[in-house]
Image (cartoon, rainbow, N blue to C red; front, side):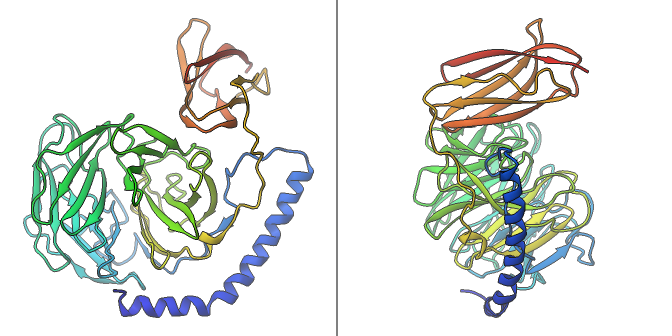
Length: 456
């Protein structure tokens, strides 16, 4: 049930529509003139590398450097966020003013109190990430490294309950856990997903409402690709995951196989969190952040997961540096409101309703190449950056590496799944010396090599 304050906010939202639409129209006209100028110049546009629309001003913002003792503006004390659909409250674990889970009013961001955290201790970080089921069951983790203190999963049956340690141990020995968390299901049929930085596994626990299965099913994934998010797509066997400087991927939770990925020119690499929403017959991810001083959040249309499109973004949600590049995202799907967190910087709420109705205004060439092709880089010779173009007839896991003339690998340009179509990537050779280099493309069973010359 929505609380009273959120209901008031939703009513006020509609009263502001006319002004918002007027401002949006002015911005859209300006963008249209800019886009027309680009197209008239004959320059090619990379597919959706920059959002064409702004999500709009936040409903509210809590600054990390404000008076709230629970939200420190320094260190790495606040890293998780989750909406509780049963109460409407926004829950934020914090270690800035003791170990606590702060309850925020969803309409104002004001603190309503905190959960009982008596007895929570242990781990490198005693309290780290949080996830909540649709019926209000709350799960949180501590953080362990690949040795030492046991990993712990904490549980509150509701916001008034005492915490219970459901699991103490290590799902896979000598692995780090507690960075990535996700949850799906309700009542006595819940699955909990956990992972960690440098861990190429997702441990999947079953929970019957009282006891957690002490022997999780472990799925192997590429690299440490799930230390930020594990978001199950409703009514499917798939989940979107995001990890430490990895591209976001869609995987099969039964096998761990990658079925899609979001190129880094659409979603920049970071430690950012993601969340999923279905609206208007389409599917979206909200993700953040882009960089240390660029704490904006990106709305990406993944309805066609082979061609994800960046359609809208927030502005930088607060002042200050997010040195750990960590973020939290939790979406109220019913009311189309997002609650976002940039560590050290700010917590904010955004109305997504307008952005979720945006359609991509640039038409893309949908002709699928019939062959695997690697083009000569351009410009060539170059200093220090150049573009490399290739085409794929089918979606494949792509590796594009650069080698010196001794056969030593000196750079990895692409290492991710790319969809069918033409792709252009930029290679920055700032750290290399002048000379001739080989770039090698492998996609599935296809391999091609080309030479390029760096002149400084």
